[in-house]
Length: 261
Ligand code: PGA
Image (cartoon, rainbow, N blue to C red; front, side, top):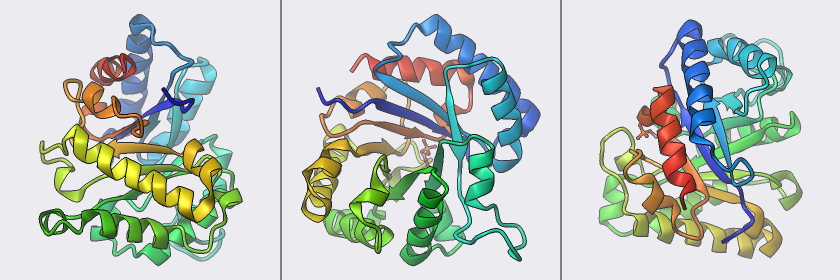
């Protein structure tokens, strides 16, 4: 078993307004307390919409809940004339630890290129946020068996211009696009294959220290029934969970199943 702490991050996407967020986080916290997880072995995080973050912060910090939180995206720009954008420094001030960057829904729907993703990672790192960088192939690429090459190239380009020192703490989420929200999960062997290719790539580019320390998680239709098998691989350090993280007690059950790893 590695020294890396298992990360279970619930990406709510555009679900739950701030009132629903308070209720969901409260129920998650109660259910996690009942589940008696080994807190030294895992970390549970919620990633709500921007408008919920202040409420989630108040609840988690006020009640000293054992939960982390973060944001689903960040601007690559410094504060200034960028209507509708959210600066990394604002997220830090709200106590966010994590920020998801380069999710495939943003790459596809908001035209985020690897270059933009790399700029967002730089902005996040300089504000002391931990990026959860999402990479992963399409169904066509998987069928053509170019999935590993594609994903490693996407990783390399998304990290362009960043040295190992900037990547300390980085989390990489391998999320095959065809498995997101479809009920179609990559097999545990698919997830393990890609996680180990990503770790080897990090080793070649940045050295064994960073490769060993970086958490590589899997995302795409993860649920309570399949999570244990997915995280059983030595190179898979957790899960980025969409749909199955929206209900607090259900997400707590998923976390419990994962920690049985
Ligand atoms: P899903 O989403 O678990 O609903 O497939 C995962 C993600 O997009 O992060």
